[in-house]
Length: 602
Image 1 (cartoon, rainbow, N blue to C red):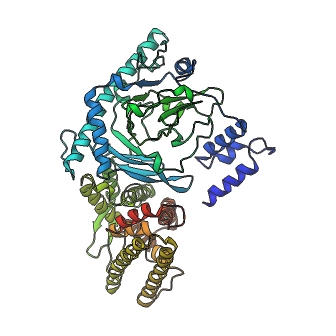
Image 2 (cartoon, helix red, strand yellow):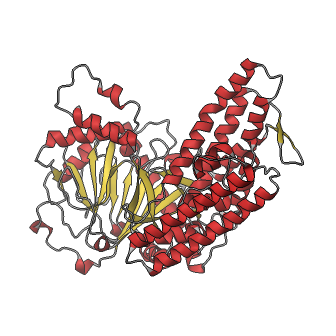
Image 3 (cartoon, rainbow, N blue to C red):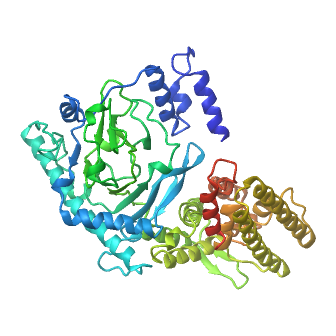
């Protein structure tokens, strides 16, 4: 948060238009990966001052010409060109998942802040795949592919997943056809003539396409991110800032973590009937606020008009080739609830279950023996080997285990597919992290404290539910409980281990190498207490460093190799601990209550 505030201050003092001597903007923003976006937005807003950028809708005469010239890789398929069978099955599948409570608002991290998305989502796709956006990793509810046994919690959920696999196959075929047509246009050096959407659903076919690119791989959709939002329940939606397009369900963005130049296909279903749709859109200046739209603009371009394309029941649109990289898009809210299925080629080189299992095995290859007392001996003290092991140690904890448990029980609502793999991951992680020593009575103290902690949390949140009209009262109770637990930790440490910690958390993390088990991973997401003492591969390395006879130069090389990883681990644990926000700090109490109750197993 300090970094964000510091940069904000710099951007204010040295904002565009303010003289700043020899200061280099590239030098200022280089350490901050997201700073270029902040600066670009500030610069764009200053250039706009009090005016809006122009944008076009289908009622504008130049709409289709502008589409063809500036947005040629955007393709629309109107609902009438898609089979009635899909139009019947897909809405039923949307409603089934919504009825069973399978879609959730995500807690995402934007510029150092946790934000609750206005859109509820669920990820469906290839078994073992994940998709990460805005620092949140989503785990697929697997669709029923051949050769994979999936136990769904409800037959209706199984049927819904089958429907989205069917839709995925259909959209993949349509995408391949569109990409092939684009390639033909390029070879023939022809420009497509824009036609009315009602006459010819495929709009925008003039594009360049690298002949060497495998078209099928660009359309090999492995996941779909389903979205739902009811704008009538979201009165605080942001206004579109550049064009004056109205309320946004999703702000301007590029889709993240996709295979380079891969396509994105979107099936849209809004819950209004044809009789409710506006019959005379000409009465509006700009876009019809009751109709959902997808809007496009060229990134940071103030010369080219944007496009606002109305989306009706069953419409599909495709973003082909590098459109997602060169353009930004946003979703403009209508008046009725809307679902969408956004099919993507997720970049999964580091995001599959097979990948992370292989990484764990690679880290554990350096274990020579596991002794009876829980200690381990290592095959190699080569700094590069030790560093790789610690990096994998961090990866499995922060990219997988904490991400999975932070989301509570949502991954178990549709299927138990992830239960066994995550248990396996935890066991591999324990070999890296928690090879337990013999602490005699002290281990018993910690076991009892974990149970006391969980029981305390249950009682607190039962009270929270009963006193939901008074969140500040519950906040006070929760804070008092924290102090009580802190005193308990301090008492145990001081009495049994003759150590006086400067703070409970400091003692746990730095003196006794406390590491989180599955239960404490869930607990630490709530209050930040890691509740299990243990030794690990890291400790084995440190024991070797302290061993007599080790040369000073070798000792220093080992410490230098692992120091960055250990520091990163400490900082990330602190960051994850801080991600739990109490009522009154900006998170909706009902959503937070549901989130926390799932953490503590209620």
